[in-house]
Length: 119
Image 1: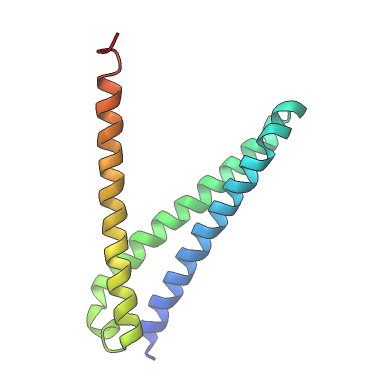
Image 2: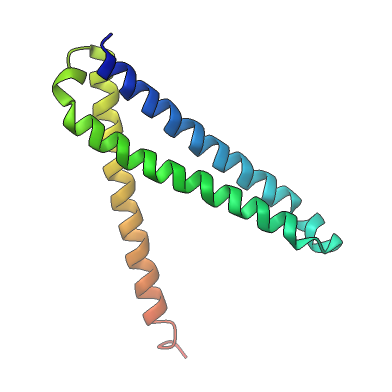
C-alpha cells in the first residue's frame, strides 16, 4: 500500500469518525432535551449544539477534502482494488447526497413560497 492510499484511507476514517461523533452527540442532545427544558439549563444544550455543529462542519470539510484528494490522486488510488472500490463508492455516495440535499433545499423553497397560497 502506497503513501497516497494510506492518506486516502486516513481521510475516509476521519470523515467516518466525525460523522459518527456528530450523530452520537445529536442523539445525546435529543435524549437530554426534555430534561434540559424541565431543569432550565440552556447553556449545556447550547454547548452540546456547538459541539454537534463543529463535528458536522469537520465532516463537511473532510468530505470535500477527501473528494479533492481522491480526484487529484485517482491514478495512484486505482492501483489497489480496495482503494479503487472505496474511491468509486465514495464518489457515488458524495454526489448522491449532494443531489438529495439540493432536491431537499428546492422542496423547502417551493414549500416556503407556496405556504400562503392555500389560505
